[in-house]
Image (spheres, one colour):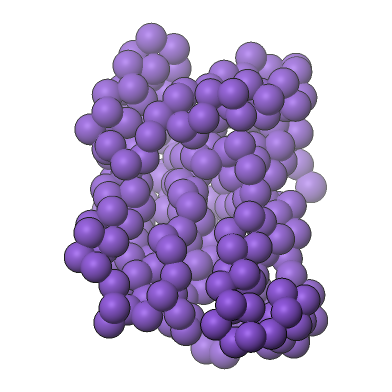
Length: 260
């Protein structure tokens, strides 16, 4: 299937590891020119060198704990270089723990890194998208927007806010040929999953292998997702072929989520 992505520009967040890196690779393989964005320049350089070199890929160094600085850097990049047809919002999740015991600053930090930064990035890229009559904003969130996950209280709370922001934005921007969708990863083989498994092991007294197997057994597919599987879904949603898919939450979780 020709996804008709050749000669598009994409800004991919959190793109030095896990789902973000896999997405950058998948989009680049379809002919998209990638601008990576993350806070670690050394890792950005390594990832940049791994991208297919038939396009002039680039990167922006930015810390998602500071949305004002993030906006300034992306605005400057757009003014000096080019806009973006595709925005992939992807940021590491908040630390785990019960919601009742969470400190206020944990909510504030997560709200900043996820919702505020998603918002300033959308504001930075949408004018170009409108001018082209084509835009794809894809937010990597969590299946917790459909079914809250035990032990991830702050994440459940903030992910729900992002999902509602996204749906509202989809309703507002659809008339301009811009779609806004959420991809909801289940348990995926990333550094984040390793951290969750360690926490579960410490709390239950089980080994990490036992904790991992318990998580796999909760999935009908009986395994964890590979980052590439999430990247494939994101790449399709970014394409011309997905032009009439707008405002959805797409679980990529092997069937773990119980709700429809």
